[in-house]
Each structure stands twice: as structure tokens, then as C-alpha cells.
Image 1 (cartoon, helix red, strand yellow):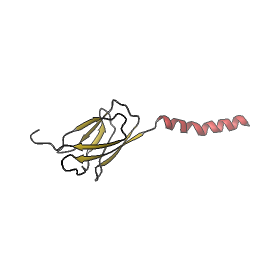
Image 2 (cartoon, helix red, strand yellow):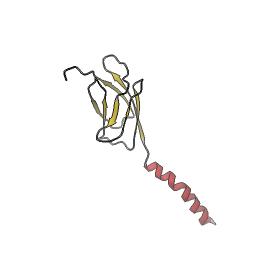
Image 3 (cartoon, rainbow, N blue to C red):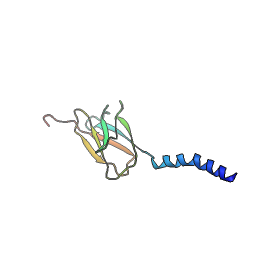
Length: 106
């Protein structure tokens, strides 16, 4: 009888243990124009050399779910009319980002 209870307990517990190994970290931030301090809508925000990315909302805010943060990872922010900005992620959880307007010709 105890063996059946133990077996049932393990069957219920094992899926929860595997979810912890795939835990994701949220990286939040706001993309803003450096000169006007206005939020930048639809800016691309992604981790360099990966397919992990998102875009900023109408207030310039973004949330990026990263499977596991590596201190060597680089966050890339780009938007039409602005210079592409890159910054190391490190141990950051909240990132205020100011990007510069591109001056034509580049």
C-alpha cells in the first residue's frame, strides 16, 4: 500500500521538477528617444545570435522571456530611423534604453 502511495506521489511530483529546469527569466525595459525622451513604439528587442526577441509596445515598454541568462549575452535594440544599440545583459532584470536618431547619410 505504501509503495502505491509513493509511486503516485512521484508521478505527480516529477512534472513539477522538470518545469523548474526550464525556468525563464523576464527581462523588462523601456526604449526611449535619447533627445526627446519620448517612448519608441515597435522597436525590435532581441538577444544577439538567437531567435529570442520581441517588440516594444506603444509606451516603449518590452518584456523579453529568456530561458537562461548568460552574462555573455548581448541585447540588441533597433528601430527605423534610429541607430542600432547593443548592450551586455549581465545580471540585469530591468533595462532603461535610450537610442539615438540616425543622422543621414549614415
